[in-house]
Amino acid sequence: MRRFLGRRWMSTSTVGWWDNVGPAPKDPLLSITEAFLADNHPEKINLGVGAYRDDEGKPIVLQCVRDAEARIAGTEYLESLSRQGSLKLVMESVKLAYGENSGIVKEGKFAGVQAISGTGACRLFAELQRRFQPDSRIYLPVPTWSNHHNIWRDAQVPQRTFQYYNPASKGIHFAALMDDIKNAPNRSFFLLHPCAHNPTGIDPTDEQWREISYLFKVKNHFPFFDMAYQGFASGDLKKDAQAIHIFLDDGHLIGCAQSFAKTMGLYGQRVGCLSVLCVDKNQATAVKSQLQHIARAMYSNPPVHGALLVSTILGDPGLKSMWVKEVKVMSDRLMKMRNALRVNLENLGSALTWEHITNQVGMFWYSGLNPEQVDRLRNEFHIYMTHDGRISMAGVTTGNVDYLANAIHEVTKSG
Image (cartoon, rainbow, N blue to C red; front, side, top):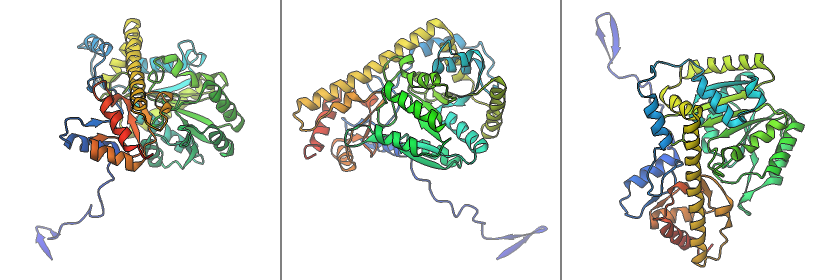
């Protein structure tokens, strides 16, 4: 039925523009947090959140961040940055990744832009890959951070996978990994985690990295590193960037996404950097201009405040030294909780071996718990984690490690 309104005929029924839109699948981590918050049990534990927590289970503000906050207050106009973002942030970030005295940094042979944390850096690179290497594909490790699949899918870059984790040994499946690299078409793109692999917490040894780098040279593959946890694997920022240095020494041109969300406790500020190494300054200028062009259509300009905090900390020797010490404190607490959980489980007389708790590093423990055991932990013990058994060690504290160990022991008795 239609009615005449002035000069137009209007339908009395509304046009169903969005009738074909259904709800998007829930993010697994958000679902875990929602269920945890709705649970009133006094001993509930959230082991799903991939952000650092102190020994009381609370978010922290690092002292270096507090001092930087006081220093920048009222000293900067909070106007839009250019599309490249903070030049100081970019320069300090690449020095952190590639080394203070890196020739590539000194000679300006890199295209670097501020990014909206690590996710934004990956997304910018995925779009660059789609536009300028349209026949290429990205190889992602099995497993990897689930959002990696979303990022390259939305950039319409074809995806493949390569073996990484060995469920039997709960370690790296190195032979299969090397076979997959060897069998991939020449000039393929590979995403690599340089340290504190998410979700497994398993990193190749330096010798294994050298073998990977050599095979990449033979196959002419492009390595793209997603570095969200520099310092969290060992407590040493330089050591955690060793994989990148090995590839640099072998003459690779690489890409690198960096995030300061976890390592500076700035999850809500979305501070990151994308850098792409190039053969010379002219090529770097061209690539950088394209990254800025991509960013312009995505979000125009990056935010200012977080970039000021990070660049102030990294650019000041005193604040940077303070941050390095605070990163070590956070890393040490994660290691301490790994040791405590392993000792507790072993003291309970478990028939299983738990060496992989302390063999793995960084934020996450890839426990090997199966979905049924994960469900039991949630339903019977109010302990929340992802369905693949990934546990955020930041959620383990001296106050709950005994309870957690007993719960894991109970659900794995028959295993």
